[in-house]
Image 1 (cartoon, one colour):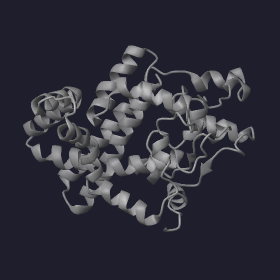
Image 2 (image 1 turned 90 degrees about the vertical axis):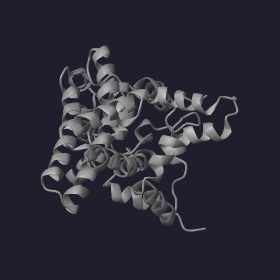
Image 3 (image 1 turned 180 degrees about the vertical axis):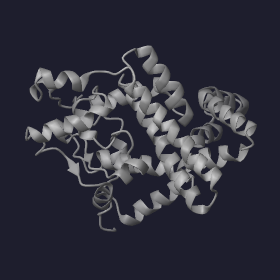
Length: 316
């Protein structure tokens, strides 16, 4: 069982450089969570106040990207980076980040840390996400269409339930299967019920569907796919160089707003220093550049360039 090669931060940074880079904050992670929710509320409010096709499309894109932002901040909590108090870290990560998007911090953490331990090795549970690439442009277009039409969302949300109902190899009655799935999704269902109640009280019951579920069913799956492609597609399997276990993508402000929030584009640095708080990754990158240590790092000038490379396979 091959463990991914690693490098000690002390081999790259002086103690004076590493101390602030690795330090936890009692407010920065919580502020990022508050920012995600503020953007969601503001984007929805713009459409409510000025309803037209343009403001709706913008709202769907911004809200879907911040739903991804909540998932990214749950990922930060999985590394203990949201708050130095682990109880606060886990509560914020679960109830303000994971539950609203239908995820579970408790389930995600061991899975994700296994990904870090075996990054790009045969035992990496995320290897399946990068394995299909490079693919053809036609195949990538089909994936994007499935994302934007809600097919990916339906498969992810209801696929396990449908499979259990179809197979039911364990002999469970249908009612028991539904009850088990409802129990697993209880935090997500409670969050959505709460949103629906609050919006209904404000006379905006329709906003739950139009400004929460539609972004979650369309833009959120798409940008999640784009992020996954940028991070690990076309990265060599069994890569021995820790600077090349993941890709860092230079993101413009538009890409950060609509595709890659909260420093997720600095993924090579994240794999190098997986417990470094996400807001310090850009500074770590600049220091590595200044030290001349990024020559072998896997990087891309933007998300479009990664997509072109990932869809550059000739049709069969």
